[in-house]
Length: 205
Image (cartoon, one colour):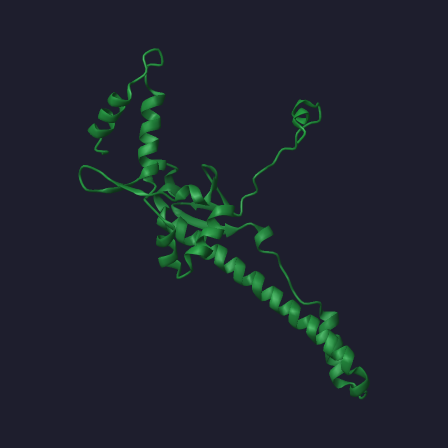
């Protein structure tokens, strides 16, 4: 509603991507870790646990009944919350581990042509989780690799069958296409027909 704001001298805020996972290549073995913001250390405050014990041992149990119920309710709520966070951490780790194992060649080399065709159902089948759960994770998470910080959903692609009957990722075809265009003579760009022929020569239909 205020189009003139784009012309103001107020500096724009930079939005930095904070990775949710880290994948490191240690002598050919991939190591996966969660960002600490996704794995906070939560524990019950000992004061309240001790308070509940002292109420249980109290001689004025009738008088303290209301306080006992209140403290117990809060402790149970905290336990539930901690369990929910742990379950979420486990889900995040499980999904990313499956993606990392499935796309191992990419995480080792950084070569986009090594990305295998992969859809949400593939990861759902491996992890035993619901497709909607996988979708929620991959749509909002990032992973830091040696080759830059990537969106998880960028590892997913449909498959395309080559002239030899091999299934390859559409990402691989896009990368080959990108290389062809990057190396063309800019003063005399390749026609769509010529690009199509070059792709067919490489076996991509």
